[in-house]
Structures are given as C-alpha cells and as structure tokens.
Image 1 (tube, rainbow over the protein chains, first blue to last red):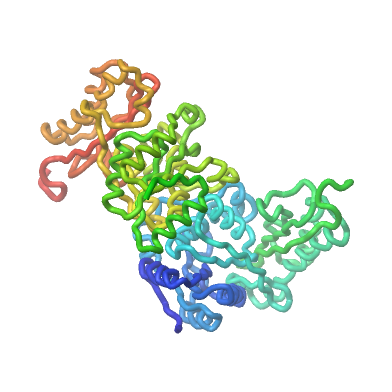
Image 2 (tube, each protein chain N blue to C red):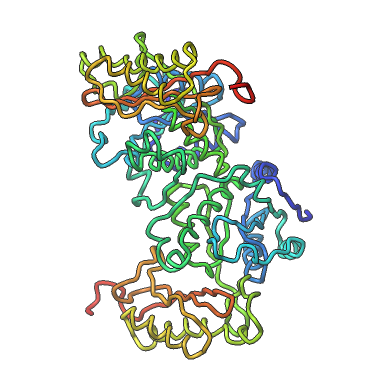
Length: 293
Length: 293
C-alpha cells in the first residue's frame, strides 16, 4: 500500500471506516508535521501494533497564543509524507484550516486541574486548543489506537483524562521520548536553535538527571529541594531562562508534599528564540506508603 | 426484539457496535427519563428512521445548578422502559452516575456564543453540563442518528453546533414540540404544577402566539416590541414571573436588529415551583434581504 495523502475530513473518515469494516485496527499518530525521529518512532510503534497507520499533519492554530510562533512553525508536507511512508504510515491527513473548521469553532474542550499548571500557566488556552483539536481528530478518525510522545507529558496526561471523562473510543498509547546522542529531546522547535544554542541545549536533560539523582541517590524527598537542584543544574549553563522545574504526580500533575514512589520531573526553559520542554521519570527509594518516615 | 435495559457503558457501546456491524442504523434518543408524549414522539420518529432505537435515561447532575431541582427531578425507570418499548425502542441505557463517571469528570465541553444568553444566562453552567454529557453519550453510542425536541430549542442549537465543530459522527434531528390540547408544551417539569397552575400554564404558548401575530399579521419588525407583546400577553395571566421573552436568529440565537425572514420566539417563566420554557417559529412577511425597507 502506497502512502495516501488526504485533505478532506469526510474522505479521511470514510477511508478509516472502510479499514475497520475489513476488521483492521487503525493506528493514529497526531502531529503538527515537521517530523523528526521522535514522530517516526511513534509511527513505527503504531505500525507494529496496528493494521493501518494514519498520521495527521496539521498545525493547529487553536493551541497557539497570539504572541506565539504559529506563522514561524516549520512546515514541509512533502518531506513529512516521505518520512511517514518510510516509517510505515499508509495515510497522511493534512487538512487546511478551512476544510477542518469551515466556520470558526465555538466549541472547546477543557480539562480542569491538569491544564492550569506548568505549560498551561505559561501558555493560557494552549491545552484547550490541544484538547479541542484532538477531540475533533479522534471523532473524525473513529475508534483507533492513538500514539503520543511522553516528550509532551502534560499533553499526554490531558488527553488520557479527556478520553476517560468523555468515554472516547480511543486507546491512548504513550511512547518514550527520543533523544539526540547528547540527550536533547527531539522537538520540531529545536530548529529554532543557533548552533551555539544547540550545543548548550542538552543541559535541560542534564538538569532533569540532576533532579533524578537527588531523589534516587541522595534520598531528597522535599520537592522544593528537587526543583532547586534542577534549577541550579540548568543555571550552570548560561543563556537559559527557566520557566519552571517541577516535581509532579504522573497522573494528575499535582506537586506532592513529599516525593514518594514514581514522580515526573518536568522543565521548561527559553534558549534564544526557542522554548524547550522536557521531562523524565524518577522513583523515590523505599516504601511508597505506610512505611516509617 | 424485547426491550433490553443496560446499565454498563461498555455493554451499551458493544451492543450498538454489533448492530452497526450488521449494517443497522442506530437511533438515539437522549432523555432524563420521566417520559411523556414528547419523548415518545421522538422514539416513534427514530423507530421510523432507524433499524434499532436506544433511549438514554439518565438524570445528568452536570446540568443542574446547586439550587436547582436535581433531587426532586421525577424518576420512574420501570414506567419509562414500558413506554419506550411500546413506542418502538429496543434498548434503554440507564447508567448510575458511578458507572458513567467512575471519577468526577474534569473535562467539559463548552459552546461559546450560544450558551450565555437566555437559559444560559438564567442557569450558569447548564449548557456546559448538557454539552459534556451529550458528547460522552455520543462517544459511547457511536455513529448514529440522534433525536432532540425543539421544545429545548437552545439546547438543540448548542448540540448542532458542537456536533459540527467537533465533527462528531452524529446526524442530529430536531423534532416538533408536542403540546397538550390547550397548547402547553409537554415537559417533565409540568409535574410540579398544581392544578390551578396547570390551568394557567398554557398562557406561555398564547404569549408566543401573540409575538408571532405581531410579526406575521401586524408587521412589527422591532424585536423589542415583539418581546413586549409577548410579555404583555403573559402578564395578563397572573402568577407568572417572566424570565425572558426573546426574538432570536434560529441558528446562532442572537437577537436581530430587525425581524427579517424566520426567527425563533422563546419564553421562560416561573409558575409556582415550576420553571417553564417554550418556543415557536415566526416568519416576517416580505423580502428577507435586499428589499426596499
């Protein structure tokens, strides 16, 4: 099966309906294009799990703030299609905004509690835009398995919660972050980095590892101190403007009073034109509950 | 096929999926139970259009305000099942709140612009609750034809817009309001009326007709004057506490500057314990646009 490029929402739905009618499992990889090896790992995973894999390639204006990089966001549909096909996708859905939203949408989907902190705090309305377009893409795609990178960990948590709350017929699969050899998480926004900045960018990952060591090796259980360890490690490399360095429960993203069991460490920082985010898991040593403190 | 009562969301979805796999068209009639002849007309219409008809019978707490009548809302599932079966339904989905929302939902669906006026103004959050539960019921039911009464005209407009904006695989069918012989629109909340109040209640319909006559017979094209004509007609019967008497575009529910073409007239008023709403269409005489004023 060669790669099929579809622009029309109804045609995309009809094609995936036909696949399901044949008993095929549909795999969905929503992207904003500008594919990198992280996206390709999602496509390969979807191709391993599913009978037919469709990418969506759509730069969603709803999730960009008025001062953000919507116009500058990198786009190269031809290259995306070639890479997606090589990775195992059969269908690329790349609608225009006019096709997807013939009228400016009045409907929005909001996930409270998960969307006010971290990225939501720095980017008001961002997750409403994400949840709304993803709900729409899910509705068009129909029942499927949907693949998202852990790189956007908060987004993954928001989507999982939306799917559960609205009983959407979607199996959400979170996949590990893909990194360059020096540890920098792959992101389309890395394209904004100058070569000097690119040399320094992996420090975000080292700062996450510093937080992980504080928890796992040094037994630090005060989230404030873990955040400070990450901030200090980041500050050691000049040029970063820290937005947040957080410790959060992996499901509801609240900050724990004490670090227990598995937590997520998350950092956002500006480096030149780029705003970079990354996260990793860390697990506190010892009993997770009921133990002697 | 005898009537099947299903409480478990996954079982309901599986049953309707199986119907679609057999090529059957599914008809959906969402209700809060307390069925009356208005609901039954929706079921009969669905049964005429579709191969299998499912009712939902669920009093949705999300759409009740803290001071509203959630606890008092009439419930009689056995009677509902009997009436639904007689009208042509094959399946009644009546989940408990614990089954439908194992965790208290954080996700909400909002339709801006249609939900702030009229009922939305009097009942803050009401339409968010409606849109959210209907989105969830639609997701569980899967692709279907869904039947709603024009009695709740604003709700119908909100749902149509949500379906369009989110590309939900649902065909929304609006059905005419069913009235008692004296003109009172059927509503589960009519059960709150004392017999004296019931005798007076049809005046809401007469007030709508007064507005319609003002437009169609007297050529009144100032919405303010049409509203006043409705309010005056309602005030002639004591005991009503008017909430609103509005003239609105049928699609986006905005108030037109001048009455042109088809408009919707909508009234809400309290009568004793009950809050009653009703609406009808009216069409201005003459050219709808481009004519000499």
